[in-house]
Amino acid sequence: MKKTLTLLTVILFTACSGLSNDGERILDTRETSYEQADFSILIDSDWEIIEKNQFTSGVPKNTIVVFRNNMQNEIFTANINISKISINDNSTAKDFALNSIEEAKNNLSSFTDISSEEYQIPQIENSVPAYRIVFQGKESPSSVKVRFDQIFVINNGVGYTITGAYMPKEEENIVNNIKEMLESFSLN
View 1 (cartoon, rainbow, N blue to C red):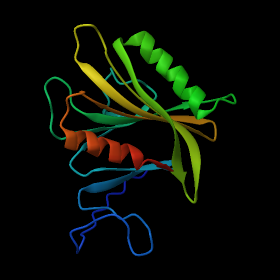
View 2: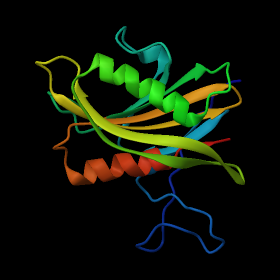
View 3: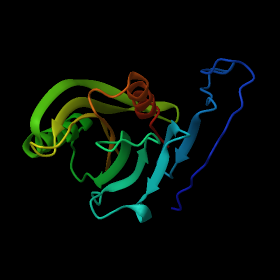
View 4: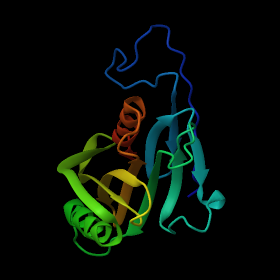
């Protein structure tokens, strides 16, 4: 199916954002809704959207989109990426997450597990079980330490990994922004 990118800018007449009178979440003026046939996510309007046809050779083939902070850092720029793979067995989101974290442990130096929890991803009027893991590590012993906040969900035989990546000493507002964007991911 043809993916669509819907850019929505809502001008709020009040100073607050959040829920409308009917309980539906409304966008604030800094948010953009990025939509594909199977999912949507709210991202900061100032962040760059990098789609598959713009990827460099270093981006893993399962990655479908990357959102990158507009405030570039020469050491590491905070970003969010979404990847998809086929899941052909009866794995749960927790199984998917634990397998992925094992890979991270084997591939990163200075690996530190920070937290993990059961999670729910909204889907139309329901929710789908998911699993969230936060950890940090280095790509190589000489590289910068990066913190990863990942949400794993399986839906209709497809495993989604939504990853926020930033330096552990990143500015608090950027970290909070990443968390809000990750938590806005929903399945269609």
